[in-house]
Length: 155
Image 1: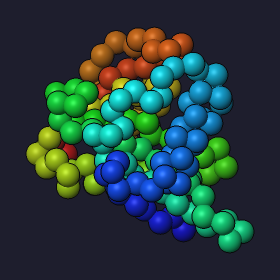
Image 2 (image 1 turned 180 degrees about the vertical axis):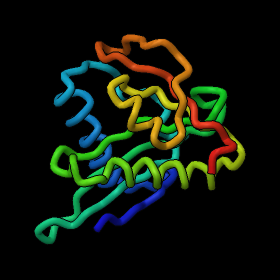
Image 3 (image 1 turned 60 degrees about the vertical axis):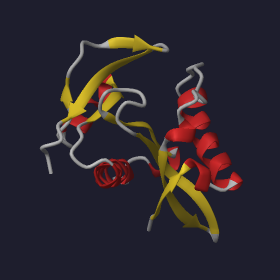
């Protein structure tokens, strides 16, 4: 069972922030062997969705993403830094994370489209949530990406 927590940056505890940055580093930097500035200055203005699970009596971060307001990065609001822990892959947690993220984002910024910069191999995954590809593939830090937008009219 996942306990979902939606927090503004200022409301994250030091331990929660540490766990979030550690998971992002583990996956985006180490697992994907991608050297890039994960701490990009956008986290303080974002809302963060954290998915916690308890395993052997210990609470651990299983998934996280961030939501940026319209105009913070793109004209639309955006979801990014979407990540699940390696030990939860194949369980459907990624689908649950994105669905929770979309629902929370719509509550925070109703009536706005959502833009993502998705890894190109995840195009069909995000497409299943109503995201439509709006760019040609491009290389971002050695990984092919595409921009995708989910129109505000999708419920």
